[in-house]
Length: 107
Image (cartoon, rainbow, N blue to C red; front, side, top):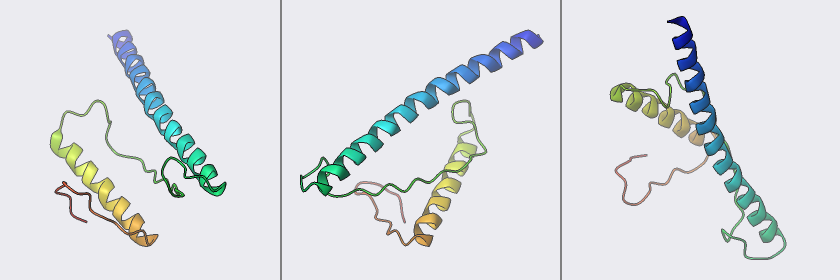
């Protein structure tokens, strides 16, 4: 029984690592595009985004496993907690929060 549990934990770790590698890779690709855009703007070219982009990364630990959560309320509560923390960070850094068209989210 213990061996089966250990294998399940190892399988979960592989899934976590694959998911994280995929999302991290996509994030790194976007950061590379932003860097190329900013370099183009600095040279006087239009750049992909048409203006200089500043990246301010917000990181925080979440008390919830993002792949193996079966409680919708707990997931929603953790998302709301993260949103509140991000809003507070924006306010503290004087970053204006602008609502997205077509969403029900309030600022």
